[in-house]
Length: 310
Length: 249
Ligand SMILES: Cc1cc2nc3c(=O)[nH]c(=O)nc-3n(C[C@H](O)[C@H](O)[C@H](O)COP(=O)(O)OP(=O)(O)OC[C@H]3O[C@@H](n4cnc5c(N)ncnc54)[C@H](O)[C@@H]3O)c2cc1C
Ligand SMILES: Nc1ncnc2c1ncn2[C@@H]1O[C@H](COP(=O)(O)O)[C@@H](O)[C@H]1O
Image (cartoon, rainbow over all chains, first blue to last red; front, top):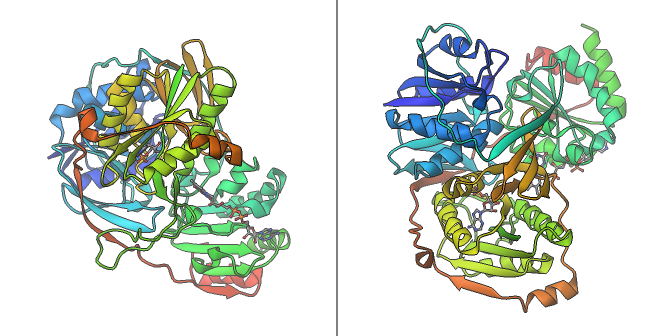
């Protein structure tokens, strides 16, 4: 039983969600990983991941923007050797893996939160209000992995051989045009130990900066509810929830967020949850370990001051 | 250009579903059903493309029990022109849905299929990508903007780091994300008009597709419940608790 994991990488590093996917794959058997694109150093970084037995490198510009069409063709060209094909349930994994599955005539198993055996997996449905345990009858399993549910493997410790593989075409009808990526010095949402999120209660994009000194102090990523993103306070990539990012940090601080099920779906597995909301009946308090009923415009400056007290 | 818009009938997003005590699934009797919210966005986008003169006809498709006809009616009331109901006992898996949609696409020859990025019941986020693969078409998933010019769709996508724009040669599949548009409410006159629009009813076998699932649900359970903690009286108390009790800062 050998599993192949498609890795997300950037600037010569393997992204944390992909290291969680490697951890999930390790429960299934031997782990090989695929690094596609010309990102220098990424294949070497993949080789150093503990538990990886072999790195496949497709160092071709065709893969530099991780377009689904060529990447899926590449994975399909490699699929013969593998019982399981996996990727983290990131924007890339979610885009590519179902395409791979269809080409292999397989029903994908999306967003798994648990591995019970080689063909039995647990996955959340209905915004995480239920957990389905499913058995796949397909000869190959095509899987995306909910990173928040698996502790990532370390970045260092392994020394796998790297093999170069040829490109497999498939990119004729899609073309990368441009990217508009949020720049931030902060940790990534899905990798942060602490996440501080704002909701509609923040009232404006400017007010979101009230979260900055607190996030700085805690080494936190900043997230948001859908309402805050829809209102244009912050960019789309801040959204936490059923249809945004799934996070499970040590500490999640929800500020001016009511706690709709779609938001809870993205953060309720956090270790400690703090809620600051002026409405004492806000549903967020039903999942919060520590709830503060307060106006955020007075609570946030106080919190900043209190954290600075060392 | 013709547009196909697949629309799924799902438990309304406001319903907090309950897991059945025998662990076979979630309680669906008496529960409010609606069009999958992402599919409403897809229908809206299709209607806007028609209003702009880019699309000539919009065909709404739903696959599942007869009640999915209501979901098609909703799409027709929003501005779709006709419907196709593929009647099956249960809602099939994305692979079977994608195969049925492929068969319909081969018959209808659309220039574009617009659908939701994710059904909020199974949370699979797979069908659009699978349909594109089966047709050998390019895909623009998680779209927050779609522009059509000539034989090219330029699609802005919501990705983990922000936004990404791709150019696809038509025909293509686009899946709608939340920010693509705000769906309209159907007006009463349009709801009346929709009653006269045609819906064709067919079976999976008419499309040559076996809807048998590949995944067997062994059980459906409730996730571990989170206990509500307690309210703290002040910011100072909160920070003290986080430092000395939870020890997370
Ligand atoms: C298909 C679909 C997918 C969705 N996906 C997501 C998702 O991925 N993520 C997500 O977050 N949502 C998602 N939603 C939206 C979700 O249903 C809620 O609408 C959203 O989470 C509400 O955001 P909010 O809590 O910021 O806003 P609101 O519900 O408006 O709550 C604002 C809160 O701020 C509090 N507040 C206001 N002013 C102050 C103040 N001065 N001080 C303190 N508190 C204050 C209020 O008491 C209130 O509780 C989705 C919805 C649908 C239909
Ligand atoms: N039974 C169905 N009938 C019509 N459309 C569907 C059906 N199932 C899935 N879809 C479409 O595929 C999208 C993604 O669904 P999923 O892959 O199940 O998350 C939905 O938003 C719909 O547009």
